[in-house]
Amino acid sequence: MSFVNTISSYEPYLRSLLRIVVGFTFSLHGYQKFFGWFGGLGGHRPPLDSLMGVAGVIETIGGTLIILGLFTRLTAFILCGQMAIAYFRVHLPMSFFPLINGGEITVLYCFTYLWMCSAGAGPWSLDRAFGRKH
Image 1 (tube, rainbow, N blue to C red):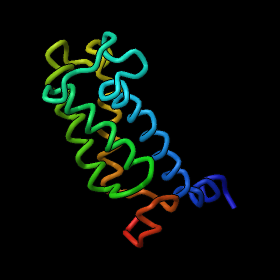
Image 2: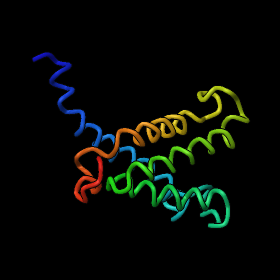
Image 3: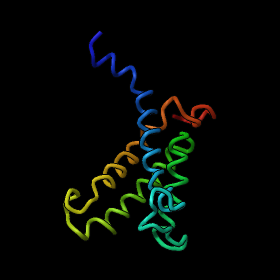
Image 4: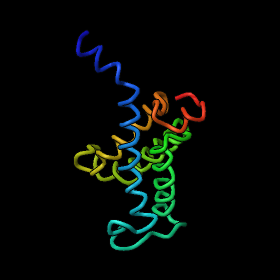
C-alpha cells in the first residue's frame, strides 16, 4: 500500500480534525469581540449593534457550531460569506494583496469555509451523530 493510499484513508478523520481546529481558532476572534477576552479590541467590547459586535456574535456562535460539527454546511456557508464581506470591506481598500492588507487569515478562513460547505463535517461531528450528511 502506497503512502498516498494510506494517508487518503485517514481523510475523513483529518477533515474532522481540521474542522475542530479551524472552529476553535475562529471562535477566539468571536470571544475577543463578543466577550472582550484576550484584550478585546483595544481593551473594550464593541456594541452589539455595530458591525464588529455582529461579527463577534456570528464568530462566537458559528465557531462553536463548527467545533461541534453541528449544522456544519450551513454554518460554513454563513461564515464564508462573513469572511468574504470582511475582506472586501476591511482589507481590500488598503491593498489588493492580502500580505500587504493583513487579510491572509480572512482569505484562508473564507476558502476553508467554502470547502467545508461541500465537504461536510467529517465523522467526528454532531451532524453525523444526528444522522445528517457529514
